[in-house]
Structures are given as structure tokens and as C-alpha cells.
Image 1 (cartoon, rainbow, N blue to C red):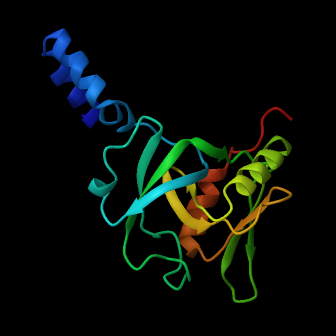
Image 2: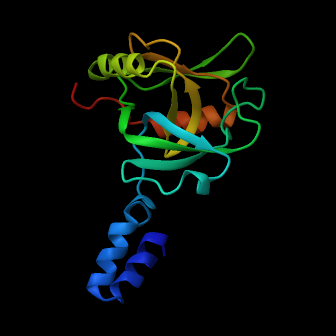
Image 3: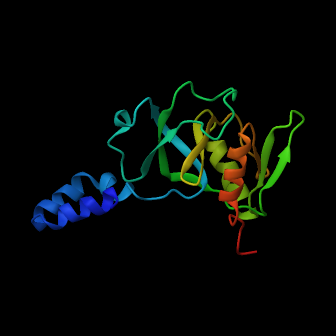
Length: 185
């Protein structure tokens, strides 16, 4: 039984007024616990070494762990230890691809994933990254933080690559991105 269902069962046994007060006071706990984030690029609002430091999360935030488990341990911006990030569910760009992701091997023999966003996502991504220069964003795939980066300049053209993932990590991400293509073409 999930935490959400357990909490719902507890609320069902309470008087309606008390249940309404608890839902009003703790909406993020009740509703965000089981919600899945869409694959996307999310604005990082804040980060901390433990999730408790980021709570309470508002209704437009999700707290996820950034542990770098899909990346090579030599990744330069990989945190020394896991950290938690509060992500904005209002400020993000969905990853909707123009075509299936492409696997590539670089000169050092490391796998990479090449992504091309659908035409309808190119301008929103450029606007999003332009408005958030100097801030951190998280790439979330399969409801997991893949990586967190500071936006240094706008991303123009809608093409991105995920590098420095482990062989298994690239395969996992590749599989999770299958079906992420724009179906309206």
C-alpha cells in the first residue's frame, strides 16, 4: 500500500472537518507523494543535503534526490554526496522529442545520448534557458534527476546531449525516452 493510500485510509476514519483541515495544512504530502514528474528540464528552486531541509514543499514543487547514479563517477559536476533538490512543477520544459534518441560513442569510447526536441519545444526551451541564465536546472527522466546544471547561456536549436552516463545509465535513459517523440507530427 502506498503512503498516499495509507494516508487516505487514515483520513477516511477521521471526522470530515478534521480531514479537511489536515489536507489543507499538508497538501504536498497528500498529493505529491505518488505523483510522477513528466520527463523534462525543471528549474531548481533550492537544494540541500537532506530532504527535511527543503520541506514543506509547496503544491508547485517536487523534492527529488540528485545522486548521480546514472553518471560516470568522474563526472566533473557530480556532487560528492547525494543532495536533494526542490523542483518547480510550474517552470519546466517537457522533453518531447522530434525523433527517437540516438546513441553515440565518443572518442574515449563513452556512450552519449543525442536528443532533438520537437519543433514546438525549441522556442520554449530557448526562452526558458534565456530567462533562467545563472540558475540551476535539473534534467528529469523516468522521475529521476539525471543531472543538474547551471544555465550559462540559452539553448538554441533544441538539440541536447547527455554525456558521461555509465553504459547501463545510457541504456536506461534511452529506454525511458522511447515513445517521447511528438505524436502530433
